[in-house]
Length: 199
Ligand code: GTP
Ligand code: MG
Image (cartoon, rainbow, N blue to C red; front, side):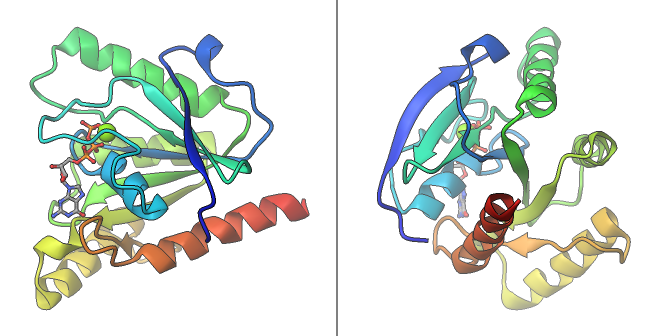
């Protein structure tokens, strides 16, 4: 994908604040600090378009970005950060669920996990929830640069079993540091965009 333009549209906490749109949209979802914002920057080859941080809980709104004046990326706040009070966590969860249920132009979710970590109950909850609601998703294990080749193989096998039980899905690997997996992820995204345009 050739990135001609990528611009910030708006930040939103409620559906009233979502930008009006008829463009297909991809949402980046996952645990706090897993690397959602970094992955968007890496995909777009823009180092500083989306704010990233060492401090989990950086992204507190849904941030919308228009790409090539053609489709939208939505960067969602991370869930499950232990140091955030329960009441705030519930509010975030509601914000994410509302978005996933109500955003009519949502094409698919890029569901990001840390390749080094075994699935948490929250991740598996989110997966079941996406499947129950019929939201299409792509599972991406990021921070692959932090593992050796043999660890990657082991972890990919393990996570494919944990998430898909040897079934249909497939985990993609990614590194926002080295851009490993960028081509493969773009090819999955453009496939979905093209499919959308055909229908
Ligand atoms: P929240 O918005 O707080 O939910 O976080 P996030 O999921 O958007 O994570 P963010 O992109 O801010 O990254 C969190 C930390 O992980 C930062 O210190 C990043 O530099 C680091 N990080 C993200 N992706 C990678 C990666 O692929 N490799 C390595 N080595 N570090 C990464
Ligand atoms: Mg973020």
